[in-house]
Image (cartoon, rainbow, N blue to C red; front, side, top):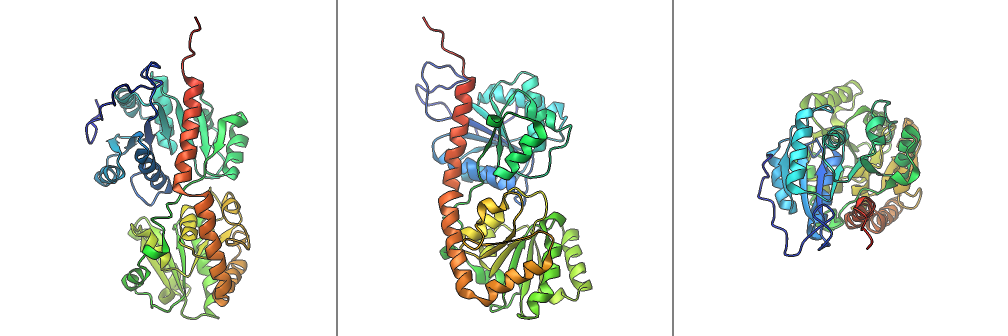
Length: 403
Protein backbone atom coordinates (compact mmCIF):
# COMPACT_ATOMS: atom_id res chain seq x y z
CA UNK A 1 0.00 0.00 0.00
CA UNK A 2 1.15 3.56 -0.66
CA UNK A 3 2.47 5.10 2.56
CA UNK A 4 1.09 8.37 3.82
CA UNK A 5 3.59 10.97 5.00
CA UNK A 6 1.66 10.84 8.27
CA UNK A 7 -0.98 8.37 9.47
CA UNK A 8 -4.51 8.90 8.18
CA UNK A 9 -6.68 10.53 10.81
CA UNK A 10 -9.26 8.51 12.68
CA UNK A 11 -12.79 9.52 11.81
CA UNK A 12 -14.67 11.35 14.49
CA UNK A 13 -17.31 9.37 16.37
CA UNK A 14 -20.40 9.02 14.25
CA UNK A 15 -18.56 10.13 11.10
CA UNK A 16 -19.73 8.86 7.78
CA UNK A 17 -19.93 9.81 4.10
CA UNK A 18 -21.26 8.73 0.76
CA UNK A 19 -18.57 6.05 0.51
CA UNK A 20 -18.83 4.98 4.16
CA UNK A 21 -22.56 4.57 4.32
CA UNK A 22 -25.44 6.97 4.75
CA UNK A 23 -26.40 6.10 8.34
CA UNK A 24 -24.42 8.86 10.04
CA UNK A 25 -23.55 11.60 7.52
CA UNK A 26 -20.92 14.14 8.47
CA UNK A 27 -20.28 17.65 7.23
CA UNK A 28 -16.55 17.20 6.55
CA UNK A 29 -15.47 15.59 3.28
CA UNK A 30 -12.46 13.48 2.42
CA UNK A 31 -10.94 15.16 -0.63
CA UNK A 32 -8.15 13.71 -2.76
CA UNK A 33 -6.31 16.23 -4.95
CA UNK A 34 -4.02 15.01 -7.72
CA UNK A 35 -1.41 16.97 -9.69
CA UNK A 36 1.79 15.63 -11.21
CA UNK A 37 3.86 18.81 -10.86
CA UNK A 38 6.11 19.48 -7.88
CA UNK A 39 7.49 22.92 -8.79
CA UNK A 40 5.77 26.01 -7.42
CA UNK A 41 6.45 27.61 -10.81
CA UNK A 42 3.30 25.80 -11.94
CA UNK A 43 0.14 27.71 -11.15
CA UNK A 44 -1.89 24.49 -10.91
CA UNK A 45 0.19 23.28 -7.98
CA UNK A 46 -0.03 26.66 -6.26
CA UNK A 47 -3.82 26.53 -6.58
CA UNK A 48 -3.96 22.93 -5.30
CA UNK A 49 -2.01 23.84 -2.17
CA UNK A 50 -4.06 26.98 -1.66
CA UNK A 51 -7.34 25.03 -1.94
CA UNK A 52 -6.03 22.25 0.30
CA UNK A 53 -5.10 24.76 2.98
CA UNK A 54 -8.53 26.39 2.87
CA UNK A 55 -10.38 23.07 2.82
CA UNK A 56 -8.37 21.69 5.74
CA UNK A 57 -9.08 24.87 7.68
CA UNK A 58 -12.81 24.26 7.16
CA UNK A 59 -12.50 20.80 8.68
CA UNK A 60 -12.23 18.65 5.58
CA UNK A 61 -9.80 15.74 5.42
CA UNK A 62 -7.48 16.60 2.52
CA UNK A 63 -4.85 14.46 0.81
CA UNK A 64 -2.62 15.77 -1.99
CA UNK A 65 -1.05 13.33 -4.46
CA UNK A 66 1.97 14.45 -6.49
CA UNK A 67 5.22 13.00 -7.73
CA UNK A 68 7.67 12.44 -4.85
CA UNK A 69 8.91 15.70 -3.36
CA UNK A 70 10.14 16.46 0.18
CA UNK A 71 9.26 20.12 -0.37
CA UNK A 72 5.66 19.32 -1.26
CA UNK A 73 5.43 17.04 1.78
CA UNK A 74 6.56 19.95 3.92
CA UNK A 75 4.17 22.41 2.28
CA UNK A 76 1.28 19.99 2.76
CA UNK A 77 2.07 19.61 6.46
CA UNK A 78 2.11 23.39 6.78
CA UNK A 79 -1.24 23.53 4.98
CA UNK A 80 -2.79 21.05 7.41
CA UNK A 81 -3.18 18.25 4.89
CA UNK A 82 -1.36 15.06 3.94
CA UNK A 83 0.88 14.29 1.01
CA UNK A 84 1.09 10.96 -0.82
CA UNK A 85 3.90 10.49 -3.37
CA UNK A 86 2.95 8.65 -6.54
CA UNK A 87 5.05 8.07 -9.65
CA UNK A 88 2.64 9.66 -12.18
CA UNK A 89 5.18 9.00 -14.91
CA UNK A 90 2.88 9.52 -17.90
CA UNK A 91 -0.73 9.31 -19.06
CA UNK A 92 -0.64 5.51 -19.53
CA UNK A 93 1.08 4.78 -16.23
CA UNK A 94 -0.61 1.50 -15.27
CA UNK A 95 1.55 1.18 -12.16
CA UNK A 96 0.27 4.51 -10.79
CA UNK A 97 -3.30 3.63 -11.75
CA UNK A 98 -3.15 0.44 -9.69
CA UNK A 99 -1.52 2.20 -6.76
CA UNK A 100 -4.16 4.90 -6.91
CA UNK A 101 -6.90 2.27 -6.67
CA UNK A 102 -5.24 0.94 -3.51
CA UNK A 103 -4.91 4.42 -2.07
CA UNK A 104 -8.58 5.11 -2.64
CA UNK A 105 -9.52 1.82 -0.99
CA UNK A 106 -7.52 2.95 2.04
CA UNK A 107 -8.75 6.54 2.23
CA UNK A 108 -12.24 6.10 0.76
CA UNK A 109 -12.41 9.70 -0.48
CA UNK A 110 -15.72 11.39 -1.16
CA UNK A 111 -14.30 13.02 -4.27
CA UNK A 112 -11.13 12.91 -6.38
CA UNK A 113 -10.04 16.16 -8.02
CA UNK A 114 -7.39 15.90 -10.78
CA UNK A 115 -5.72 19.13 -11.83
CA UNK A 116 -3.45 18.42 -14.82
CA UNK A 117 -3.16 16.09 -17.80
CA UNK A 118 -1.22 13.16 -16.35
CA UNK A 119 -3.17 13.21 -13.09
CA UNK A 120 -6.40 13.33 -15.09
CA UNK A 121 -5.48 10.33 -17.24
CA UNK A 122 -4.23 8.26 -14.30
CA UNK A 123 -7.39 9.04 -12.32
CA UNK A 124 -9.59 7.93 -15.22
CA UNK A 125 -7.49 4.77 -15.56
CA UNK A 126 -7.96 4.04 -11.86
CA UNK A 127 -11.72 4.33 -12.36
CA UNK A 128 -11.54 1.76 -15.17
CA UNK A 129 -9.66 -0.56 -12.79
CA UNK A 130 -12.31 -0.31 -10.12
CA UNK A 131 -11.97 3.00 -8.26
CA UNK A 132 -15.40 4.45 -7.59
CA UNK A 133 -15.25 7.95 -6.01
CA UNK A 134 -16.67 10.75 -8.17
CA UNK A 135 -13.96 12.26 -10.37
CA UNK A 136 -13.66 15.98 -11.05
CA UNK A 137 -11.01 17.45 -13.35
CA UNK A 138 -9.74 20.98 -13.84
CA UNK A 139 -8.84 22.77 -17.06
CA UNK A 140 -6.67 25.84 -16.67
CA UNK A 141 -5.54 26.74 -20.21
CA UNK A 142 -7.39 27.96 -23.26
CA UNK A 143 -5.63 25.75 -25.82
CA UNK A 144 -8.08 23.54 -27.74
CA UNK A 145 -8.17 20.00 -26.34
CA UNK A 146 -6.35 17.55 -28.66
CA UNK A 147 -8.44 14.81 -30.23
CA UNK A 148 -7.00 11.92 -28.19
CA UNK A 149 -7.26 13.85 -24.94
CA UNK A 150 -10.97 14.40 -25.51
CA UNK A 151 -11.58 10.78 -24.58
CA UNK A 152 -10.58 11.33 -20.96
CA UNK A 153 -12.84 14.39 -20.71
CA UNK A 154 -15.85 12.56 -22.14
CA UNK A 155 -15.39 9.54 -19.85
CA UNK A 156 -18.56 8.92 -17.85
CA UNK A 157 -16.36 8.69 -14.76
CA UNK A 158 -15.67 12.45 -15.04
CA UNK A 159 -18.61 14.05 -13.27
CA UNK A 160 -17.53 17.65 -13.73
CA UNK A 161 -14.91 19.63 -15.59
CA UNK A 162 -13.95 22.78 -13.69
CA UNK A 163 -12.75 25.56 -15.98
CA UNK A 164 -10.82 28.51 -14.57
CA UNK A 165 -12.72 31.02 -16.72
CA UNK A 166 -15.73 31.30 -18.98
CA UNK A 167 -13.37 31.50 -21.94
CA UNK A 168 -11.80 28.15 -21.01
CA UNK A 169 -15.26 26.68 -20.42
CA UNK A 170 -16.26 27.59 -23.99
CA UNK A 171 -13.11 25.92 -25.35
CA UNK A 172 -13.84 22.74 -23.38
CA UNK A 173 -17.45 22.63 -24.61
CA UNK A 174 -16.43 23.26 -28.21
CA UNK A 175 -13.60 20.71 -28.10
CA UNK A 176 -15.48 17.89 -26.36
CA UNK A 177 -19.18 18.33 -27.09
CA UNK A 178 -19.93 17.73 -23.40
CA UNK A 179 -23.32 18.80 -22.01
CA UNK A 180 -23.19 22.34 -20.70
CA UNK A 181 -24.00 21.32 -17.14
CA UNK A 182 -20.92 19.06 -17.03
CA UNK A 183 -18.53 22.02 -17.37
CA UNK A 184 -18.57 24.73 -14.69
CA UNK A 185 -16.44 27.75 -13.85
CA UNK A 186 -14.58 28.19 -10.58
CA UNK A 187 -12.14 31.08 -10.73
CA UNK A 188 -8.68 30.75 -9.27
CA UNK A 189 -8.17 32.37 -5.91
CA UNK A 190 -5.65 34.62 -4.18
CA UNK A 191 -5.35 35.13 -0.44
CA UNK A 192 -5.51 38.88 0.36
CA UNK A 193 -3.85 38.22 3.72
CA UNK A 194 -0.76 36.86 1.97
CA UNK A 195 -0.80 39.31 -0.93
CA UNK A 196 -1.16 42.29 1.36
CA UNK A 197 0.85 45.38 0.34
CA UNK A 198 1.40 46.28 4.00
CA UNK A 199 3.20 42.98 4.66
CA UNK A 200 5.70 42.99 1.79
CA UNK A 201 9.39 43.88 1.51
CA UNK A 202 9.90 45.26 -2.01
CA UNK A 203 13.15 46.99 -1.05
CA UNK A 204 14.77 43.67 -0.14
CA UNK A 205 13.94 42.22 -3.56
CA UNK A 206 15.29 45.26 -5.37
CA UNK A 207 18.55 45.12 -3.41
CA UNK A 208 18.91 41.39 -4.02
CA UNK A 209 18.38 41.79 -7.77
CA UNK A 210 20.50 44.94 -8.09
CA UNK A 211 17.61 47.22 -9.05
CA UNK A 212 17.99 50.90 -8.03
CA UNK A 213 15.41 52.01 -5.50
CA UNK A 214 14.04 54.78 -7.73
CA UNK A 215 14.06 52.91 -11.03
CA UNK A 216 10.63 52.20 -12.54
CA UNK A 217 10.13 48.43 -12.65
CA UNK A 218 7.92 46.57 -15.11
CA UNK A 219 7.26 43.03 -13.91
CA UNK A 220 6.32 39.88 -15.80
CA UNK A 221 6.26 36.30 -14.48
CA UNK A 222 6.53 33.30 -16.80
CA UNK A 223 9.33 32.86 -19.32
CA UNK A 224 7.59 30.83 -21.96
CA UNK A 225 7.20 32.19 -25.47
CA UNK A 226 3.40 32.41 -25.36
CA UNK A 227 3.60 34.40 -22.11
CA UNK A 228 4.78 37.36 -24.21
CA UNK A 229 8.13 38.08 -22.58
CA UNK A 230 9.70 38.76 -25.99
CA UNK A 231 7.00 41.31 -26.74
CA UNK A 232 7.64 42.97 -23.38
CA UNK A 233 11.33 43.19 -24.17
CA UNK A 234 10.57 44.64 -27.60
CA UNK A 235 8.40 47.31 -25.98
CA UNK A 236 11.13 48.33 -23.53
CA UNK A 237 13.12 50.74 -25.79
CA UNK A 238 10.02 52.91 -26.36
CA UNK A 239 9.42 53.03 -22.60
CA UNK A 240 13.06 53.83 -21.88
CA UNK A 241 12.98 56.69 -24.37
CA UNK A 242 10.78 58.49 -21.80
CA UNK A 243 11.96 56.77 -18.60
CA UNK A 244 15.57 55.76 -19.27
CA UNK A 245 16.12 54.13 -15.85
CA UNK A 246 13.30 51.61 -16.33
CA UNK A 247 14.02 47.95 -15.57
CA UNK A 248 12.16 44.98 -17.02
CA UNK A 249 11.96 42.21 -14.40
CA UNK A 250 11.33 38.81 -15.97
CA UNK A 251 10.82 36.11 -13.33
CA UNK A 252 10.00 32.43 -13.44
CA UNK A 253 12.86 30.96 -15.46
CA UNK A 254 12.61 27.24 -14.67
CA UNK A 255 16.25 26.57 -15.62
CA UNK A 256 19.52 28.43 -15.83
CA UNK A 257 19.67 27.80 -19.57
CA UNK A 258 16.33 29.56 -20.04
CA UNK A 259 17.47 32.48 -17.92
CA UNK A 260 20.64 32.78 -20.02
CA UNK A 261 18.59 32.74 -23.20
CA UNK A 262 16.64 35.76 -21.95
CA UNK A 263 19.83 37.64 -21.14
CA UNK A 264 21.38 36.72 -24.50
CA UNK A 265 18.42 38.27 -26.32
CA UNK A 266 18.62 41.33 -24.09
CA UNK A 267 22.30 41.66 -25.01
CA UNK A 268 21.54 41.37 -28.72
CA UNK A 269 18.98 44.17 -28.34
CA UNK A 270 21.34 46.37 -26.33
CA UNK A 271 19.16 46.03 -23.22
CA UNK A 272 21.36 43.90 -21.00
CA UNK A 273 21.66 46.54 -18.27
CA UNK A 274 17.91 47.13 -18.25
CA UNK A 275 16.65 43.52 -18.13
CA UNK A 276 16.67 41.46 -14.93
CA UNK A 277 16.05 37.73 -15.39
CA UNK A 278 15.18 35.75 -12.27
CA UNK A 279 14.39 32.12 -11.62
CA UNK A 280 11.45 30.59 -9.78
CA UNK A 281 10.75 32.67 -6.69
CA UNK A 282 9.24 31.67 -3.37
CA UNK A 283 8.68 35.26 -2.29
CA UNK A 284 6.10 36.23 -4.89
CA UNK A 285 4.34 38.88 -2.75
CA UNK A 286 7.65 40.72 -2.25
CA UNK A 287 8.66 40.29 -5.90
CA UNK A 288 5.39 41.69 -7.22
CA UNK A 289 5.46 44.50 -4.67
CA UNK A 290 8.83 45.56 -6.09
CA UNK A 291 7.15 46.33 -9.44
CA UNK A 292 5.60 49.66 -10.40
CA UNK A 293 3.58 48.11 -13.22
CA UNK A 294 2.80 44.45 -13.83
CA UNK A 295 2.21 43.22 -17.37
CA UNK A 296 0.77 40.04 -18.85
CA UNK A 297 1.39 40.15 -22.62
CA UNK A 298 0.29 36.50 -23.10
CA UNK A 299 -0.91 35.75 -26.60
CA UNK A 300 -2.04 32.11 -26.28
CA UNK A 301 -2.97 29.41 -23.83
CA UNK A 302 -3.74 31.46 -20.78
CA UNK A 303 -6.83 30.82 -18.69
CA UNK A 304 -6.49 33.64 -16.19
CA UNK A 305 -2.91 34.42 -15.29
CA UNK A 306 -2.40 33.75 -11.58
CA UNK A 307 0.38 36.27 -11.07
CA UNK A 308 -1.77 38.93 -12.74
CA UNK A 309 -4.43 38.27 -10.11
CA UNK A 310 -1.80 38.36 -7.36
CA UNK A 311 -0.36 41.67 -8.55
CA UNK A 312 -3.87 43.14 -8.58
CA UNK A 313 -4.41 41.88 -5.05
CA UNK A 314 -1.32 43.87 -4.02
CA UNK A 315 -2.87 46.98 -5.52
CA UNK A 316 -0.52 47.13 -8.51
CA UNK A 317 -1.65 48.72 -11.80
CA UNK A 318 -1.71 46.04 -14.49
CA UNK A 319 -1.60 45.83 -18.26
CA UNK A 320 -2.84 42.60 -19.86
CA UNK A 321 -3.78 41.32 -23.26
CA UNK A 322 -7.53 41.00 -23.70
CA UNK A 323 -7.47 37.29 -24.50
CA UNK A 324 -9.00 34.17 -22.95
CA UNK A 325 -10.08 34.84 -19.36
CA UNK A 326 -8.13 38.05 -18.75
CA UNK A 327 -11.13 40.33 -19.50
CA UNK A 328 -13.08 38.40 -16.85
CA UNK A 329 -10.51 39.50 -14.29
CA UNK A 330 -9.42 42.93 -15.54
CA UNK A 331 -12.10 45.54 -16.20
CA UNK A 332 -10.60 47.84 -18.81
CA UNK A 333 -10.03 51.39 -17.50
CA UNK A 334 -11.48 50.35 -14.11
CA UNK A 335 -9.14 47.80 -12.55
CA UNK A 336 -6.45 47.70 -15.22
CA UNK A 337 -5.71 48.21 -18.90
CA UNK A 338 -6.33 45.70 -21.68
CA UNK A 339 -4.39 45.69 -24.94
CA UNK A 340 -4.34 43.55 -28.10
CA UNK A 341 -1.93 40.58 -28.15
CA UNK A 342 1.44 40.52 -29.93
CA UNK A 343 1.53 44.28 -30.49
CA UNK A 344 4.40 46.09 -28.80
CA UNK A 345 3.27 49.67 -29.43
CA UNK A 346 0.01 49.40 -27.43
CA UNK A 347 1.93 47.62 -24.66
CA UNK A 348 4.53 50.38 -24.46
CA UNK A 349 1.84 53.07 -24.64
CA UNK A 350 -0.17 51.52 -21.80
CA UNK A 351 2.88 51.20 -19.55
CA UNK A 352 3.93 54.78 -20.29
CA UNK A 353 0.44 55.98 -19.50
CA UNK A 354 0.66 54.43 -16.05
CA UNK A 355 4.18 55.67 -15.39
CA UNK A 356 3.31 59.18 -16.55
CA UNK A 357 0.05 59.39 -14.60
CA UNK A 358 0.60 58.18 -11.01
CA UNK A 359 -2.97 59.14 -10.02
CA UNK A 360 -4.40 56.82 -12.68
CA UNK A 361 -2.01 54.04 -11.67
CA UNK A 362 -3.02 54.42 -8.03
CA UNK A 363 -6.73 54.44 -8.86
CA UNK A 364 -6.52 51.35 -11.05
CA UNK A 365 -4.43 49.57 -8.43
CA UNK A 366 -6.94 50.35 -5.70
CA UNK A 367 -9.84 49.03 -7.76
CA UNK A 368 -7.80 45.97 -8.75
CA UNK A 369 -7.32 44.98 -5.11
CA UNK A 370 -11.01 45.49 -4.38
CA UNK A 371 -11.96 43.35 -7.38
CA UNK A 372 -9.77 40.43 -6.33
CA UNK A 373 -10.96 40.58 -2.73
CA UNK A 374 -14.62 40.54 -3.81
CA UNK A 375 -14.57 38.06 -6.67
CA UNK A 376 -11.28 36.13 -6.82
CA UNK A 377 -10.31 35.39 -3.22
CA UNK A 378 -9.07 32.02 -1.99
CA UNK A 379 -11.94 31.80 0.49
CA UNK A 380 -14.51 32.27 -2.27
CA UNK A 381 -12.82 29.61 -4.39
CA UNK A 382 -12.90 27.12 -1.50
CA UNK A 383 -16.64 27.69 -1.06
CA UNK A 384 -17.31 27.30 -4.76
CA UNK A 385 -15.28 24.09 -4.98
CA UNK A 386 -17.13 22.63 -2.02
CA UNK A 387 -20.45 23.44 -3.65
CA UNK A 388 -19.38 21.56 -6.80
CA UNK A 389 -18.14 18.61 -4.74
CA UNK A 390 -21.35 18.31 -2.76
CA UNK A 391 -23.52 18.57 -5.85
CA UNK A 392 -21.56 15.78 -7.55
CA UNK A 393 -21.63 13.62 -4.42
CA UNK A 394 -25.39 14.07 -4.16
CA UNK A 395 -25.86 13.09 -7.80
CA UNK A 396 -23.77 9.94 -7.47
CA UNK A 397 -24.95 8.80 -4.02
CA UNK A 398 -26.93 5.54 -3.90
CA UNK A 399 -30.65 6.18 -3.99
CA UNK A 400 -32.55 5.42 -0.81
CA UNK A 401 -34.94 2.49 -1.21
CA UNK A 402 -38.40 3.61 -0.16
CA UNK A 403 -40.26 1.30 2.15
